[in-house]
Length: 232
Ligand code: ADP
Ligand code: MG
Image (cartoon, rainbow, N blue to C red; front, side, top):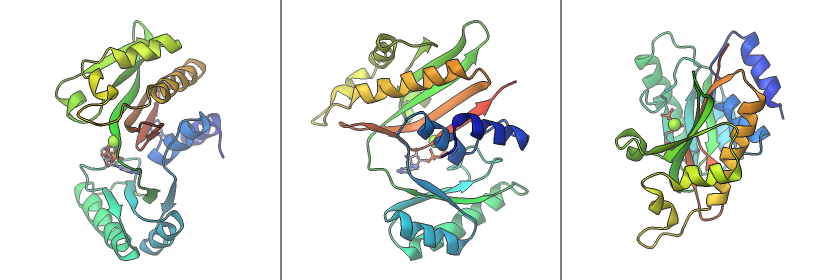
């Protein structure tokens, strides 16, 4: 397994500031953050072979440094249940992405295990000109996009800061269980915030991070999409 430093050096050598989803997740994994298992396929046959290794249901996603919003490009297919569905998904992703992003450098598709459904939350990190690195926490989906229901904490975070970041969002009640659903594992979310905080504190060249979404469960949490952006 590569260390975070090795992953960053490789991207720099290739002249890239944006890490791919695969690199970003490898980096998270090296920090002890749970992510989906994933492998890169560069052909339809390879995608099918990898799906047999990873098992069903699985997920296929376009891997391209030029495509950051993969769903918008038709580059994400979830819930694939057979070799046939994987082969069809591979063709559909390639057709859609090459049509929507002509000239994009497409490395292939990643084949991932499909995470069981959870409450979608996001953790982000941005660099504020005044405060330096700042972490953001929010619920995923419309909560963040429409309601802008997020909280911010300045790095480095203490355990109490992490707990407060989670508590302070307006929709925090949803995390405590809602209409019969079980409460989510807040300490797992605090751990993610603390690990990201420690990493960015030690790694000033990271300018931005997005773990979007993280699926939160009654027992643990898993990052299903991630993006890391390097600065100067
Ligand atoms: P985008 O680049 O569009 O943000 P994502 O990787 O976030 O693409 O995928 C879009 C959505 O698909 C996610 O918000 C999540 O709901 C679902 N998804 C993606 N990967 C997985 C996975 N491995 N397991 C389960 N659901 C997934
Ligand atoms: Mg995403």
